[in-house]
Length: 248
Figure 1: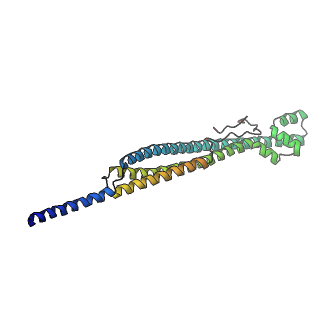
Figure 2 (figure 1 turned 90 degrees about the vertical axis):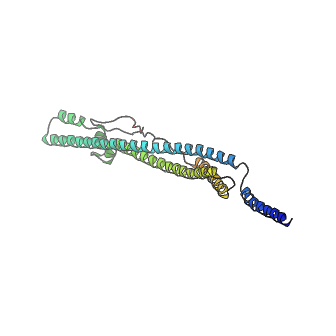
Figure 3 (figure 1 turned 120 degrees about the horizontal axis):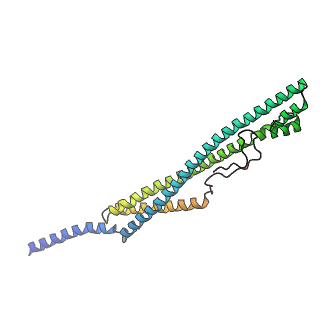
């Protein structure tokens, strides 16, 4: 009898020893955790794809505006050369007029040469009897307008670059949160580390959603490309351009 009792007690003791770890594992076995992790992985995947798409779009607009700005700078350089050629032409004509006046040439020749001056030069002579600063400003107006367009495009490219950096950083954090959710879904049920990873993934997702929501509300609206700037006056030269210079 004593032996059976002893063996029975031993078996009860071993049974309780086995049951204790099961009880410990049960404390970390959160109800519906599998479904929560599946939902987290799904939301993370969709949100990460959306943010990466937004980053790609902003990055593309950055490169587009840089390309446009460089093209506008090239155009501005060409316009500056045209303006300088126009100024040299006006100075050459004025010099010829002075020579013919000193030589006492016919008025027809002087009038003909006077007609070869640009409209800006004629207005300047009527205004101050010389080529003044207003003349230079008007001759270089097209060049200055195109250069201003280029600066606007460069500024816009910088703004889109900053926005792309924000989205790329957010996508990186989302990728980390997705990794925690995926690791938790692959771990053995009932482990405390599994629950900890799930909590971290949930907190990261809430933080990312909050950041994205605030960013979308307070961000400043950006144009995709620079606005057109009207040109006040045009350069009168063989390569003169007329109308409005569009930035594209």
